[in-house]
Image (cartoon, rainbow, N blue to C red):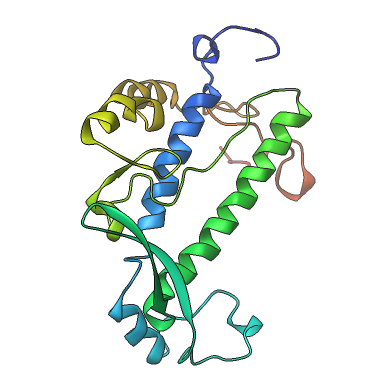
Length: 209
C-alpha cells in the first residue's frame, strides 16, 4: 500500500484490507455460533456434570453456579428484549463472551500493526448478533452493529460485509505454492526468521545422492 498509494492492492497480488475484514466478519460470526444457543438447558446439564466449565474457572469463588443470573438480550418473535437467565442456563453465553473478548485482543493487535505502518484502515468485529445461524439471533437478520433489518436490507448490504464469490475466486487465484528454497508464496508473509534462528534459506535437510 505504501509502494502503490491509492491503488488497489489486488492489482499487485495482495489482499485488500477490506477483503481481510470481510473474512474476519465471516469467521468471527461462524465461530461465535459454535458456542450454541444463548439459553440452553444442555449447557446447564453439562456444567452440572462437570463436562462444561467457564473460562478461567479458577477466578471464580463459587464453582457450582447454582445462584445468580446473566442478562441476555434475546430475540423472540421478531423483537429484542432483555431477560435475566439463570446462570447455568446462560453458560454458553458466558463462554461466548470470553471468546469474543479474546478475539478483540487479536483485532487490537492487528490495528497496532496498521497504525505502526501509517495505514489509516482499522479492523473491527461485528456485533455478536451479526450473521448468526444458531440461537435466538438465527431467527432474524441483523446489520453490522446488531440492529434488526429486513431480508431485503440484508441482501443489499451482505456483499459489503461477507466474502462474495468474486472474493473467494480471487483468494483462490493467489494461493499458489512456492517450492523454491528461501522464497515465500506471495499470499503469505515471510517468516521473520527460520527455525532455531537459522536464515530463511538455511538447508535444513541434505539429501544424499
